[in-house]
Length: 317
Image 1 (cartoon, one colour):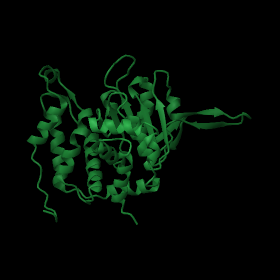
Image 2 (image 1 turned 60 degrees about the vertical axis):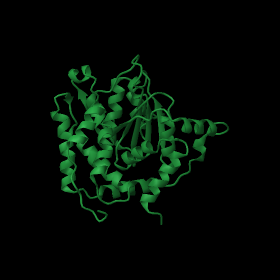
Image 3 (image 1 turned 135 degrees about the vertical axis):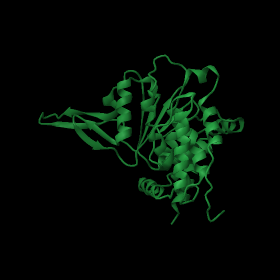
């Protein structure tokens, strides 16, 4: 029987067949999935965000739906609605696009705030409520949302309270020259997605998520996380720091990362690896910081340098 850590590596290998040169991003996305989180991909059009989501859904045998968010998309398109039966004796539920394992919300910032709220409520609760009737979404359940950071025409940017619902925010960026040459060659005669094969079942993902929950965190790691988060709240250049939900997201991400690295315990390096991806979109800088060209990334780097990491003694030490 293949160990679940190896199955996780196989998933990344399959996605890497179509998303070239982005192994670190692939690992972070899988880490968030195993941590039962949702992912916000903020990047320019055409860099492979949709391909990334489709490759994951295929490798993990997940039912996926994609919805292109535009100003005319309604909340019912997301969560579904009740329709009167032909014989008129009752109503039948027509599922919305959200009723799947992996939901790709393309350009979430181009739809109305009401539709955004409907999606984000399901992300938080893991349930769909239509006409006072509540239904569980399928498990595992992951939302991958994309937004374009360039161009504000016709957009409704997510409020900070809603950005907080995403476990991590990532940016894929443009591929390097070698990777882009590989993309051009692979796309000549076929769609690389056809090469992606299923390596796990949905039940395997649920099992891996349960194994992640069992990963051990030492008290000193808990303290390290809270000290880092406290720095985002006390810094005079930061208007809004990381919330307790953000602290929980860091905790869950580091456990998943430890699992991917074949450990049943967390080390400080795990925290350092995920801290910026989990924290950056949860913070608002004061005008003073922006005037002085201080970025969120600069501040988070400073915090990681200032806060001393605990020393964890392990068998490998």
